[in-house]
Image (cartoon, rainbow, N blue to C red; front, side, top):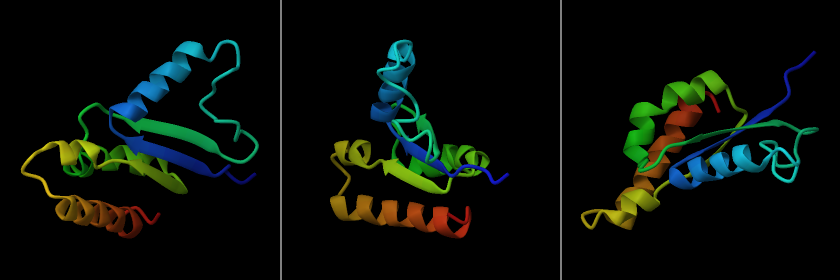
Length: 108
């Protein structure tokens, strides 16, 4: 039997807090980690407070590789922009570099 497709949501504290919220309130079925997609795909999350694009590349690529997702949804970049030395163009280029790594190295 073929493995069900996997969607992975990766990002900063918003992803972490959303995951914690779902874990806290999933008993009654109102909130689930599947987001109602259980017949379509599995859904996993990796969320770390303070995560920037560079930190995601440095610390999370192995976890992404192990998860072996078919789709990656990135919630990243806002912590980078909080740094007054940062520029939106630079952050954009960092995100593009991350996506290229995900496509080339992880075959996503």
